[in-house]
Image (cartoon, rainbow, N blue to C red; front, side, top):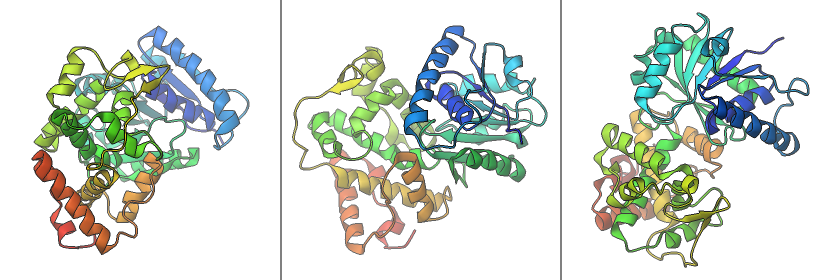
Amino acid sequence: MSKEIITVIGAGEMGHAIGLFFAFSGHPVRLFDIQPHILEKAKESIEKKWEVLKRKVRMEKPAGDTLHIVYTDKMEDALRSADLVIEAIPEVLEWKADLFRSITKIIPSHAILASNTSTISMETLSGSVKTPEKFLGLHFFNPAEKMKLVELIPSSHTGTAVMDVARHILENAGKKVLWIRNDRPGFAVNRMIAPTQILTNAILEEKMIPPEAFDAHFEKLPGMPPFELLDYVGLDTAVHTMEYYQKHLDPAFVPGGYLTDKIQKHELGRKTGSGIYRWEKDSPVKRDASPDPDLGIRHVKAIMVNEAYRLLKEGVLVSPGEVDYGLQYGLNNRPLMKGITQEAMQEMIQSLEYLADRFRIEYFRPEKSLTNGIDP
């Protein structure tokens, strides 16, 4: 039985990784970008990553020995016969809206259209789509060819059958799917770690703790330490995300002078060679530093649990188990909500009150359901 044709719009780092994932699982893929040199770079990257995947990553074997990917800078060719179209361009609302208006003029009538946005509301984006009942969000995690999780996000217009088809395609290709029940900024996993951006921003503005001293707590844990991750993602991307959260979630996400100054100097992190850290050979250069005694892992865990309570209150997810499922497959994190004792809860409340008082940021105050000892 033939597999669905997947079209990916945008051949940047995330877009071509999504294309590689689907091609590796046996789907015919059309990869579109308006810039031929981006397509050429994507092709080179895909060929290198494919060799690594074949040797190291446990995924379904591809159908045959060849990746079925067509690289094109002609949108009509990319969309022809597509069953699922995934937009993967930068997180700029106006760019995405303009693109959707163009796509919906020529997309096949049966096709599902999806956005790989990590923050922007599906409700907002659906206004640019001619058939919003066939439009939804598919948030892949980086690197998309390896990370298991995809968040499935409907708007109020998305048909249930469309959601089921998209989920079926993803799960058959080997992904773990987290169904987002309420379209809120940041969805679930990114929203869980969003307050960490408030904390890192506050640390930079306070100028009391070197980034190395905070990151030192996290060096031996899975994933990147918080400040290193900011640099890796790009300070411009981080600031853009914070500004979106500031507008649509809470004013506490306002970027401070340190980050905005870095943007003005075009010191964006890894991609420019300098940001919070200086980067050499794709690695940050860090001074030796002991872990700061006053701020560390317990504070980050506390703000993540606090945010999980907010997500459950807002109906983004329906159970603590879904929180842990998202963190496990989206961030490779250990369970956060399972087995929290009353003693641990009290320690988290104290950590949150400490952060709120120290930085004068009310967003860190513990949720009422948490302080009342109510199970989420």
